[in-house]
Length: 267
Image (cartoon, rainbow, N blue to C red; front, side):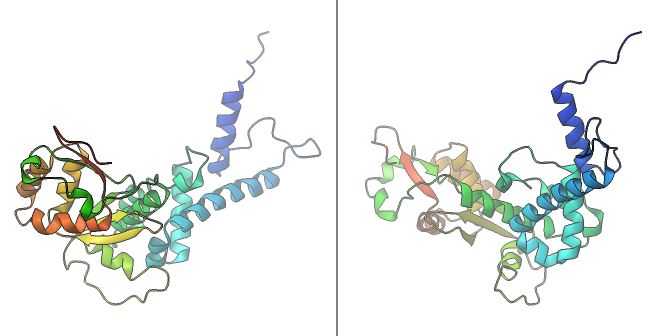
């Protein structure tokens, strides 16, 4: 008679991890208590602790989303997310990257049309906070750049820089729901906002940028020159004015270096 194959360590780990996040699965074979017997009660305690740990990590990462929907609603939603999307990194600050997309498909939250974008802003804040350090350029660092150099000038974005674009006033909603703020009535249909999130120094800064700046930064991030990035931004947003927009981006700490053909790099 053929004996059943012995499960590999990887198979046993996969079964154990799956059972932790699915309350309908039985205890994996070989999991016993101190008395040598299978104990569903003990395993359920451990299972609950794991899920609640993931929910706690999501609460820490998305405090504004939680404030908007209430702690009870958020906890229930977070449990569903934790069971559907287990962590793929041991770093808990990495957990929850897909929550915004999950919220967008989460039927009970469909009435809050702006909520996924608020989650995207909060995720961008976390990513900016944990991004690599880099010294931002200031206006005087561009003194060596002449008008003839702008055709080939390319700018390097700060590693913490993120942009969230929304058809809703997402920055205003976020700002009046952070800890210590006082919510006030706001028309979610009052217009969209493009939000810059960057950590040039110790603190993460969040600000609304003028029309076209988001497209301009996206083009620069793809390696386009200053002139080409301006052209692409104007194609998307005719109101974009680089003369007004660029100084504000420099002041925000958006850039850490520049380079141009025939010139010494500044980085």
